[in-house]
Length: 322
Image (cartoon, rainbow, N blue to C red; front, side, top):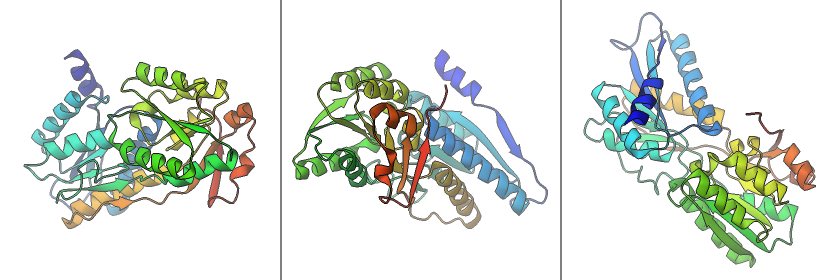
């Protein structure tokens, strides 16, 4: 239980967005529940908070928000859900699939609005058909990412599919990747794990067997992204991923959504739900932004200009320093 209490204690800082003349009797009280620490989820949380700050100031309302982090542990997340309901929050904003599932379950009786962020496939995560649940989706264009792979190397023979089989975000894109590769007559080798050590072992096992590796927006793999990227790059294997946080951790390239935009949109959704009392359908964010790590590209001997003309925007980044 020491881990649980430490997580809740460390995340219990209350941020008060003070303003006069609230449009609600006592303002809005919002819980932000992040599934785990990693760059994309951190970026989303930061954007949510920035937009709540901005809306509080511009609309002259009072908003209080508290951050929680479940450390990717279902027991911890369920405990957070129980606490959030008991404390009477007006809305809950879970970031990533497991957090969203736990918060939806916790709020089932009270119908406290749950506005999730960054769920790749809300239907597969059982987050549709609930009249108190909505949010934003970072649905992946798997075919486009694999098109990028073939643009770099049309002669790819075998692709590694690296993912966690406990991550709902990976189910649909991995199925899509298999279908795509089958249609192209390209072999694939699956490598899975549910912990950092298992993911690193799975990645190492792909070395010498595949020409490229694909990982979707998998939160479990993201936690080990820096080490996985280093292993694959040193072996000369391009690593294609589902989020820009992988790329800033050292992976080669991705095509996906802007997570700052997603966080901003999510914050606007939760306030609209609170102000109108209406819970809309979930929103799929626009994607198509190619993000390439120029350091990794150089190490692999790949010219990033190969992606020019494939999407509306190509963003070049370097590996973030830890």
